[in-house]
Length: 246
Image 1 (cartoon, helix red, strand yellow):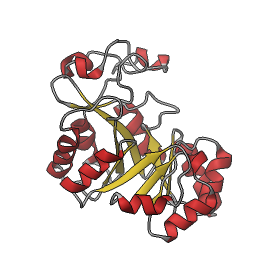
Image 2 (cartoon, one colour):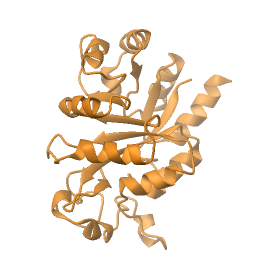
Image 3 (spheres, helix red, strand yellow):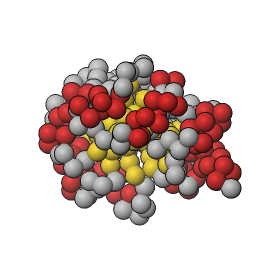
């Protein structure tokens, strides 16, 4: 069965990378969530996509120049203006907060290390230590566009699955994935034709394309039995999966 991973939570309907978005993903019937992590000025693992807070919050500045307390003061409702009037204002969560919430469900979690533009010292070590603290080794996939970082994760924790992210076509990407000790790969859906996906899965490499938001693309990937899809609209994907299953 093709699994459904909610991209930054249910990012198509809720403020991305917030607890509100992750809760909505769980309620939609998604099998997992995808999120992004950076380090704050005081070394805390925070869940947010960009290197700055400008796009998704009412603040400005680089994440690594702001303390956790300063980040927690920001409204993370982003483009969803209706959420700004809620009693509980959406905030930037820490990875620890997400892990605490995960105690109450069985969702998988794809953690993307956002260390291509800013090389956060010890980001890999901090994330892996937290995974081990919560004994989530079998529930986590670590992905990144920084493939050196994935090799570092493997060296520290070979038991945790890693997946290279890439946006352009690769020749025999399953061989590359194995070369960096990854058990899966996360291509842009445009760089993942059916033949490549099927051959990779035949070679034992799971394929989870991102970000699959159009129903026509969801249907194509569901029909070929793709390992998983990563989407902003998990509810739509889950409904389509049920429809096709029937």
